Length: 273
Image 1 (tube, one colour):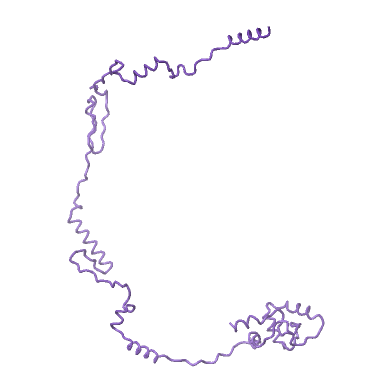
Image 2 (spheres, helix red, strand yellow; image 1 turned 180 degrees about the vertical axis):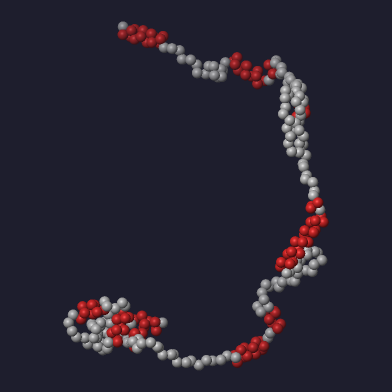
């Protein structure tokens, strides 16, 4: 009973469902035999289908209702109102050549050229070279491209080993040997020369050579060295006040003969190099 009832429901639903149209119908996809025959007849041409082509009509000889006259350079004007179509055919342009004036004659050109050459000659002072096949050929340049002093062939033709030896002897005879003179003494104040002092010593920094006595020598030296702008100035002041044997200003606490941070090593290296 249930099966019969289900079948009746399905049948009713099928009857109510709308029909699905053919998607290819009406859009040029007709594949029926009749449509195929029609397409073959169209491809076969008018002769096969029995139809005839329509012959083309003759060109009308009517005139234009109105025309505006046109004028262009080098061409004829457009036809007037009522002219036939055949009169509108394009016409070849006629080139316009300006008339030749009196200043374009050959005599004027020659006169201007002569005036320009005369002006150029007056400015430079060197006459211009006239281009002519009758001109002599230019002087040939040496293919080597070097001067005669560097050309072995040219030098060997004018000079010999003996002549060169004589020339060297003449040059040596003109030499004058100037004897060496003593160096001038240094002018100025009598302050110590730290360069000479550095070259006269051999000990390294920190090597004690002279005795120093007192308390807090390092602190005193640091305070006194701060008063100088450079170690060279401190060394000059140290040597001027009795150094290196004496240290009245307290600039050499370790007794090596070098005040503050002065170092004789750069001066010694300069002499060695």
